Length: 609
Image (cartoon, rainbow, N blue to C red; front, side):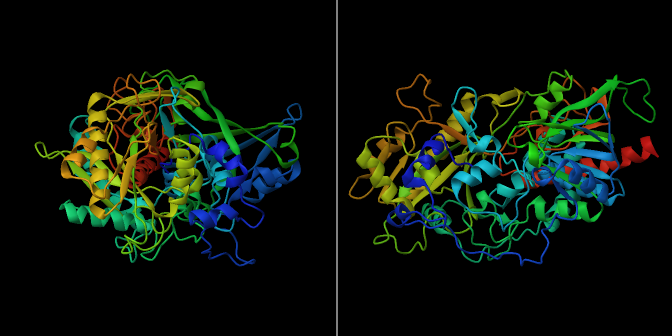
């Protein structure tokens, strides 16, 4: 999720990084890598989890598309004068199928409403995943995994498939920190987050996605993180996961091949289609249908506009090669934007909404990585290779000794060969090859901060972002501690990804030399920084760009998730969070979505009964 892939396209296109038809490459043996062969495939007769409610536009023709929708309980109307436009009606239309949309679809469909979910990505199951970086990035990630802020200083990873981020994240299940909930309640006046309702929602989410709190066997990097912390006297915490205790997969960032990870595509969305929901994949929302609101019946808060649904575009099977677009017009009683903090704001703005909070307050949980080399001959206590095992099973919090505040969180990333190669700063051809030969036993740890600085996204793909001074100081402190952990665990060499190839050989050096090295650790952001050397930041969590607020000056949506401008238009994804969470936010997003979708159910009953 947090891989910095600035150079991935060029690396994968090069013959040394290509896989053949058997998903093999002769170079992999030299660097100690092979694609995980552990597979628990479906039998040929076993249906895919969402087949009951899935309509995949890339496989549909003009006639079969209408038939598929009709079979699933939808009435399709076509205007003879607009041959490529299809009109359907439902109770609820949801744009997006990730942690927010998946939960909302389940709650509303199980409440008896006819739900349609639009997902611009395609549908994949464990049978489809290859763990190959090139095709996986193209199929599962926003912009093929190559997405950065406008200035190129921060690389951003976001899911773009049925299941959204939950299909490609690293399984980490961490409850919202109590101090964050209290801050949202006290400073932002949002009582939801300290309510019994929210606490109950967390428990419901925890159970539905099958969270386990123990790990039978930790992978190479997490062994090192745990050992280094213990030797330094740092507290190390176990990280719960939405998978079994035995889950030992280091490539879930490209879809879980064993099917063990419980994303929305195998949990909430399954509940939704079992209750009659329809999911249309390969269908991209263009704008919400918003008109003047002539009546505000049963509405506690008067809104001048009203949402009647959404207009989306898609390619049918015969139209893919000529890039011909068909139009889907969905009329609904309630419309929910759940396409994430990067795409919900542009969609709202393109639909004519003008609230000043839309697209602002974007938080990204910025990340920098440290690496350490652990040769097998000197570090045989660490079993396996760095790409094997659960991605995040342990974490360490960097705590300020005076305030006792958490400055950063240290965890392990997923880095397959192309991602690893893209991170390595260029010094020389020989150095680059040497680094790759050490790939299998080079551990990475990353420092992630709860950013107080923020960014802006008002047009699709146009993301600006700036950390504040405190963020930079905190990430530098986290990076230094990550290096200390690697050294304490027994690394023979450690380093950062700073442009000058900053590194330190540990054997035979003095404490003073180590201190001098750590004192030189910096966190300059991007090639245009004022410093001599620079580092490209990474991130995988996007939050807050349509935040919830007690009035329209403090938020884009109210405490029900409803737009302050348009009645019956709701937002139900990470963009409603008031600030950054500070930890992996999957549980927070799903619990918030569960609360909001229950509120939407009650609103539907009042307004449309």
